[in-house]
Length: 232
Image 1 (cartoon, rainbow, N blue to C red):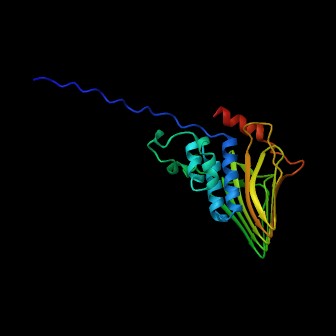
Image 2: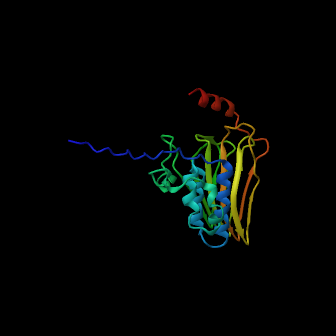
Image 3: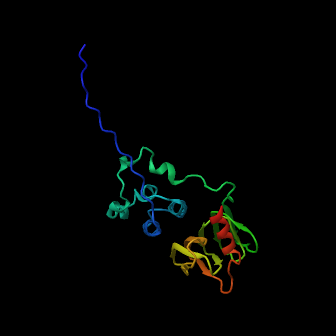
């Protein structure tokens, strides 16, 4: 019996997803900020997507966050990888569970015609949500214990005031807007590349949101904790 020879079909080559840089994340955050200012996203949608931005590790995880926004079309090539590069949908990993076991759950600080304060020695989680309506919220991280490198604070102020204070030896970044209000983040880059990063995302309507380093306040045990992390 004659055996027919069949040419073997070439197998697709799987390529590793490209890692996202801080500049890539900041670029996507800018697109989301513009979408919020133009009314394409509401405050809740903006906060959810911003959280996804700073969780993203690859360009494939960033692309779905701005896929439905006009500004993303102009820079679509920046996200690089074609849709067939991976069999796993990008959106499936965009909101992956926290890697660190036992991570502190998201904390909500709400002030409605009142005040809410978080300060002293406390453990900050990966995400903190602050909402002030005719009220005041104070978040003081100068004595807080950082169990992870990245901590995101989503702040919304409507006729209210939200203030965030951080130690001088952490990185502080922000993305937000004010509508007849003020959003101000004094960006700070830590000298140590492994220092904690605090990202403040805000939306102020006739309100105020401020995030600044507190002079003279530093994480005293930062060097020891970083050494333990590298040794583990």
